[in-house]
Length: 301
Image 1 (cartoon, helix red, strand yellow):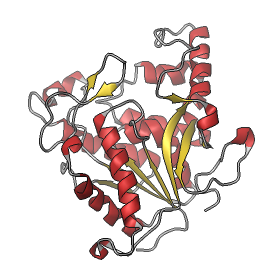
Image 2 (cartoon, rainbow, N blue to C red):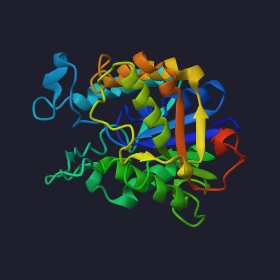
Image 3 (spheres, helix red, strand yellow):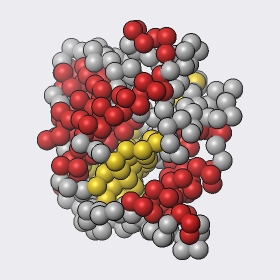
């Protein structure tokens, strides 16, 4: 397998997570000639269906949403230009665990978890599947969630655990040589939302007269937002924002084109989606630019 000099691996829980969190970054690096690999851990079978015509695909009816979302993900990857996208262990190996909303406003695991759910997966078993991919692709940079999965979703938390453990195991020379030659990932990032960027967006949205996020206080950023002093990289990918929005539109069962996500771009301009932020979780920080952020995930590699 002939690989470009720069290789980026992203580990996400469900189809659509990648487009919302990192779509512009992915499109930017593909356009610049980097090899971008997406690993999605579940099919998102438990997702809430926003398109009435496929409402019968729901988990408590025909249970066909997962197979439908395979197609949505494929279309999203076309929009971003990503040709290497895989499901951890193959499509359907791990099922979407579902979630409930807690009193604190964060997601959490429900009381009933199926034995085939990703949340119930053996960590080493799941990590080994990623080890094999890491040793094949040999990425210098890995992107996944923080230890809380950004907002508490059990599959996001499990994806974080699998990514971090898989990266550690992949580097050990004596560990499972049958899975390929060892590979040390130089830099690991956790995807993040800038609190200052969010506050500015909410203020501009309110000033425009849009009420989509009226319940959010611009002066009180939600728990999943990260203050800029704890952010390490800011990727300006505004040139690829239309690709990101097209990828989000491809996930039509989960993202409403006339809903608040797109109200943001309609009222604030597409630049709201074109800047993506990251926390460096492993590796050495590279040179920083404007605002004290790295402007390239491969900086210093």
